[in-house]
Amino acid sequence: MSRIQIAATERSPLVDFDFASGRLCLRGESYPEDAAAFFGPLLQALRGHLGASEPEAITFEVGLAYFNSSSAKALMNLFMPLEDAAAEGRPVTIRWLYAEGDETIAEAGEDFAADFDHARFELVAEGHA
Image (cartoon, rainbow, N blue to C red; front, side, top):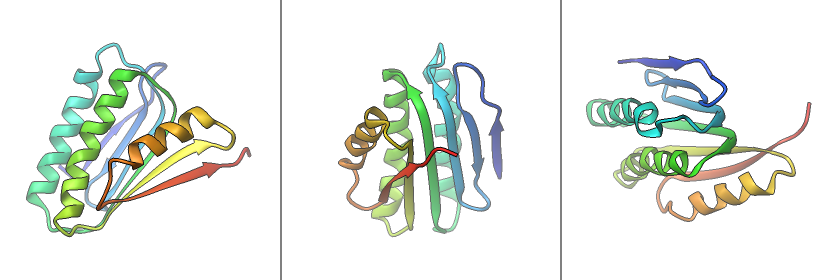
């Protein structure tokens, strides 16, 4: 599987997991009715990719304006295999994007960042256009 693309909806984020290029992206809002059903196939695909591919660099951009607690758990489930891959020597960067001044999302990123020892975790404030 080389790419998963899912359009954003009112309750779920845009997904663009381009495994061939090592670029993964989630953007929008995330409070799907069934977070496990939404994120489960993404986690499965990510694990499959990590297990089957050469250890090329991966960058995961997460730009969520809002997410609920079940989405936070799903994000952590996505982050952990990436941290494990980084511990094994694969270059992994998580880019946590948040709107400048959005302290809630920035603090959530800081909380996630605390769980990483091997992957690079960047907090990136995005200015208003």
